Image (tube, rainbow, N blue to C red; front, side, top):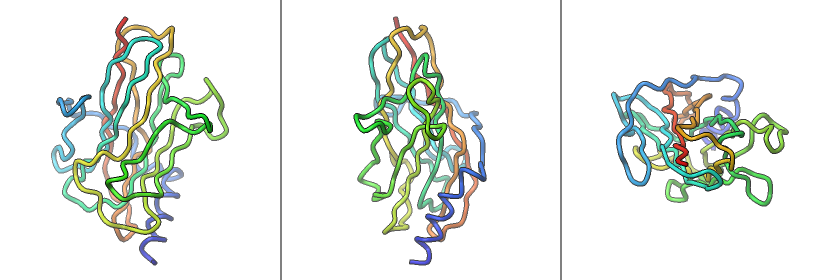
Length: 192
């Protein structure tokens, strides 16, 4: 129990720490429906967002994938920033981000919120994702999809690549210790 509390405390403290800002340096490769950077590139722990395509007014699914870099990762945190005039994470009927945790990794405490706190509509310029469990500090397997989000392309979106920027990326091991790492941005290519 002590380790679970330590891991949860670390993940909740990460927003203030801003462990690592975005550092996109690895070229993407094709994996599945979108493109993501291979999970364990260079032995570095990272979260990679997929790259997708959609037309104005349409939606697309993006994924966040863990590259463990050879270390045991029990929980993660990250923000995804976007320009709501172009693309945005869609909103569920309850007002929460339209994102869902990968049930297969056993992190039932995973939660999502719009950023900045208290924002509404076009004032929301990002989301925060916390991937954790209150009952298990088991390591997440390398290459696992952490979560999936629906991205809404604005009806008046400009053609071309619209970025989805990762920031405040953080990781915790099963003992609650902070781990170094980073993130690889994703994008939505708007096709007219």
